[in-house]
Amino acid sequence: MEVRRTTIHELSRKIGEKGILRVKRDSHAKRKPRPCGLTVHPGIGCDARCVYCYIQDLGFEFTRIRPYPLSGEELALALLFNQYFKAGKDGTFLAFGSVTEPLHPVCLERTMEYLEAVNRYLGNPCQFSTKRRAPREFIDFLKKLKICVNPLITVVSLEKAGVLEPRAPPPAERFEFMRELKRAGLKPVLFLRPLIPGVVDDELEDIVEEARRAGAMGVVAGALRVSPLILARMERAGVDTGEIRRRIRGKEGKFLSVNCSDLKRTVRILAEEKGLIFFNSACCACAYTAGVVCMGRCWEKGMCSRCPNRCWEKVEKN
Image (tube, rainbow, N blue to C red; front, side):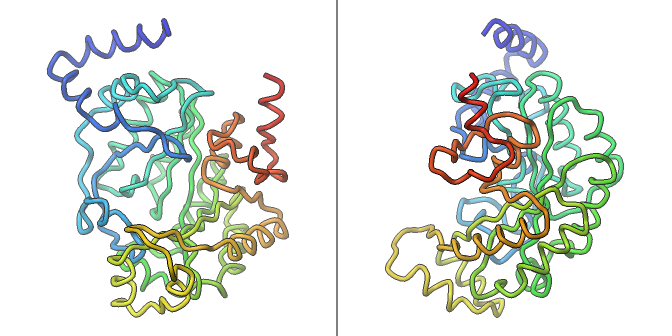
């Protein structure tokens, strides 16, 4: 607590009274962590226009992206003001990329500024998810950080990427970024999310194999969530949503989780056959990379018996 108070005092002195008021009003100072960690927004909105994207339902822009207004020091102070946030290596995971593309040229500098602030003032494990290939300078920057940064490289489809992700870079560029990260000594992970039943089923092995060749350490697979807006957007793009609709039949709500347990099980088998680590969720990959206990505590549900991080043993020792 003393270190936290000292850091808050230092940052408050640098930012000044107006900056402190702005920081206290910001959502980073108030939001509860999600299972993957506390989401950090280096940008607002996204212009990739992926047909399965949920940010438009959440009120974020779907056609452009803007850098987030807080500076790195203001972001660090906002997190320290957050009652749900715990600083340090064993603290709250920080997840970059939930409502924006953190490596987009418009906000890449802000992402680096935020990572540098976390590295200097907080020390928490960080994770970013991206569909972009960043310049070499970004990889060199990551190598200099003392904190753990876990890269998740999103690939949903090879054959249908142009339809599903019309303005995102092609998967080939993402796999090349994986190779560059691997050569630099970092630990990229394939983020196969969302799994889209009836659309990508026959591509799963090819995607996992391409990730293996590119140097991925492991795979995180995640389910699809849909809303009426997302379904309409997918259908306008020519995506067959018949299987998706079959799986959500009878459910109610704005956002509906599509049961993809069969596809997730297939990805797990494929990953393990190819010598990759299958992570049950994004937080598991972050925990493994950082060598700490996973925030999601999914071992308590019997979901992580084969995870090499063995969080439950770390908890028992403590």
